[in-house]
Image 1 (tube, rainbow, N blue to C red):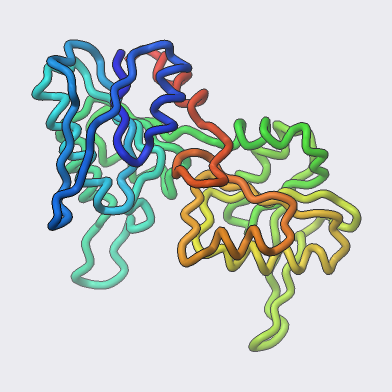
Image 2: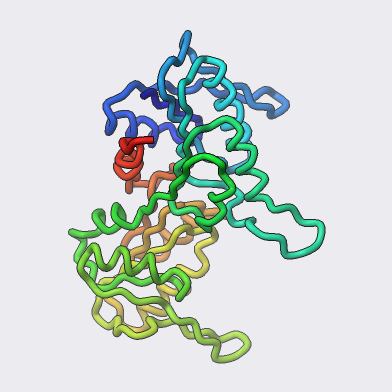
Length: 286
């Protein structure tokens, strides 16, 4: 097996090759002055099973993935596995208004033209993967998040809302501590109360977990509400740290105990590696 790292996932691809004990090749990707992508795999042939590790977000990384698929096929890859740590367009999975495309379906149909197996991590809606004609699996980051925070004296795990409660449950159960979700109650046109739905947070070290953090607005409001309700500390962890519009600066400057994410998107707080869960999945038979 050979691991080919795209430009978006260099560190994760290296970690993955180390975990598997297999060869690692970093694709040489650059951009032409007009923004078009150029990539090259600097080796004579790839007569082996090949795993491409590359995000499909933003659009430039999606184009790079298409080009890498074509390159490894032409170089003799026997079977091609796509590891897509963060799957772009997964949130655009349905048509709300006439004239809109099914963006997730479109991307999957194109990605599926030159691959034999696909792994994603905490994709927004797992059912969209059924558009792939090849075997596919969405891997869950909850175990590695729980393991990272196990020695951190966390007393309570919370999700930002009821819809994400299963994630809080998965982390909480692995850590052996209670879990709950945040309940948002609108008191007036401008006044909102945020608090755990059932659990008392007074004097507790709390961990908020989510699949992704984009602007961080919900986290900032939740942290303030929890501290006002008597929480001792609030930490935050997510799988995908998008952190748009200076969100990470806002979060780290908000007196949170810690702000961490997995290395599905690489940034200065992506210290929780998903290489182990991906390597375990790759070791399974086709």
